[in-house]
Length: 233
Length: 233
Image 1 (cartoon, rainbow over the protein chains, first blue to last red):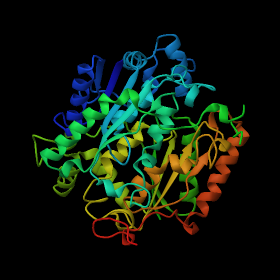
Image 2 (image 1 turned 120 degrees about the horizontal axis):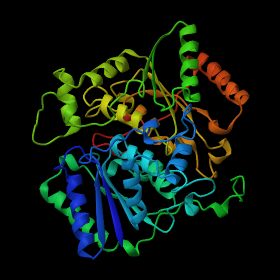
Image 3 (image 1 turned 90 degrees about the horizontal axis):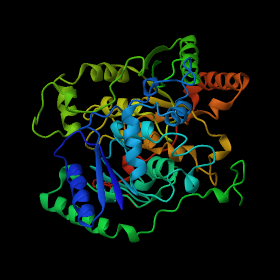
């Protein structure tokens, strides 16, 4: 299996980085090939803009998705985007590894999603959800957060974490065709002991070792909807 | 009323910009004071990093929220953050005005949230949801998107848009204390006629004129939970 880990944390020594390193060691130990995109270390540019296109279909008015489609076809899209897109297409498994900022990804990672999941390759027209451009691949979201586990779930103060992560799990990863696995979550990280952190690392290792046998989360399939995308009931 | 509009779109002539201009004209026409933060025009830096703090409580290990608390207290936080925070505290109404990218905010705006909603001022300890640092203020999310209205809602292919926007509506705006109004949504924008766009602008004007009488969305209150944040009853 080929694995891409996209990591975004502003502190190089963070526990989130330890989870990244655990994933590299575990997956390489199983004989998989692993590449890591460490977005802060790379000084990744998260801002989608006109500067991403050397030539433009419409130089007077930017429709970002349209220019993505043409830029990737003409190979004139920005080199940093093309490089990440190549890794994405190479990988059978994508791991997004990040600390929860405002119940979602840090801007650094959101900007990787905005720029790299290009229209015309990852999705477009009726190519989304189970028909998405990356169908057949798997994705895992691995997060650290400050909250305690009992603050999440039905009836809990923040509701289910999966509901907060819906734009990423369903609106992004499932949308482009990934089989999305249940997130791996390390709770209350800034406040816990070294032993508790070690427990998370061991739990993550075990989780990764059994990943190929996991059942993915369930999301819509296009066959459940008509041509205009109304539900077929 | 004092109003801050935070606008993030890579195309200066976008319909999203027309909505921004409609809000400025309508609200100023009603006698309100309006400031606009146009993040692309400002070349806003969306990346939360150690560079945001001139002096550090812990120079060896970055805990971003901790340094925010101290930086804002010592007035040593980055000038661009302090300037936006001043506008945020000045405003009675915050409008986030953006195109939906991946069922959420563009990285440019996400990075404004990551950097400007500082710990210790906007939230901290038990100061969140109805007890949040910005309690008493109102917030509106105004979005444009490519999808059609029938693709959203219970049973629709993408589910309710409010569920996709949950990290912003509940996890961010309600979390820091805002009374959050129902989003204003302009559907299918890249594909509609000039007349249909005009209808959205008129609808937005009418919505803004009645904004003060609107009932906000309902979110958790801390009194429904015990000291450890377990639900009461």
